[in-house]
Length: 311
Image 1: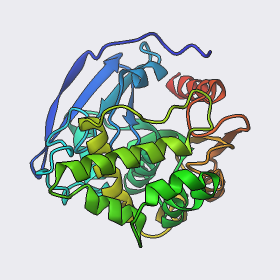
Image 2: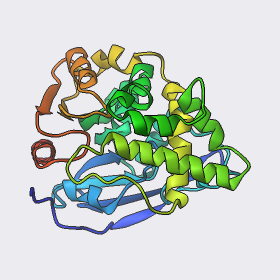
Image 3: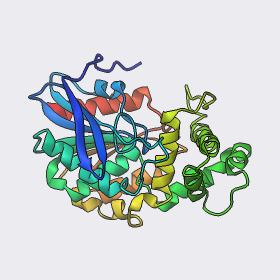
Image 4: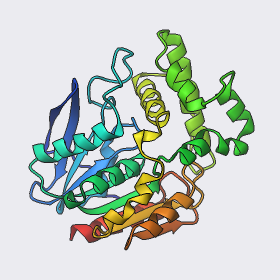
């Protein structure tokens, strides 16, 4: 087991009004005079966790974590059906990152994240390359429609019985259908849709070591996660088709490390490979023995990259 840095508590935290009635939770940990870095959680809608702080040397980094709109400790929470989702898009999140950076008085920062966090990292860095010192991302996803179609339809060939249950009586665009269910006025409909969505998400990763399939109660976290991710993916992240890979040349002056598991059924490795080809100077590291979830190899690679960039 790869040792992460010891648990650390934030030395500062707060709530930031980013407009449209949204207030973001943010925290900073490590060295107030250290190298700034921002962590982008996955999902979208998973929220940040204390374990994310442990990737950073607390003597060298000033790590910034925040909960993206609608999830975690940010408000209003997407689990509340009254929460308006119109102001929760990729463009809003990119703008939120700039507001957090300015609020904390940071000029430039390292950007890191995984899965959906990779999509957000790329969207931000391609719009504000002058604000990014380095990028370290894992479980690469760019939220292309082809990637979404694979995750919620194509990969079903590996789990035909489970996919049939996930599909149920729904027809047409499955992600859009679930997005509508998550906005249903009936709480029971929303709860069962969130349960089915979370079970499918876990099923796709169920072949990986330590994986479990959700069988517990459905609470605010699951409701927010299912609502946010279906909201984003039913709109292909509001991104032009293939734009993040197409525009990766804008990152040519930003050192980048891309970490991926070859056995990742959620985000097949071809996306990471295509991104690395389009990003001059990016370093692609592929672990043949792991999938989407973290592994000792991938953790070691990420720690090495962050330590190298933090020196």
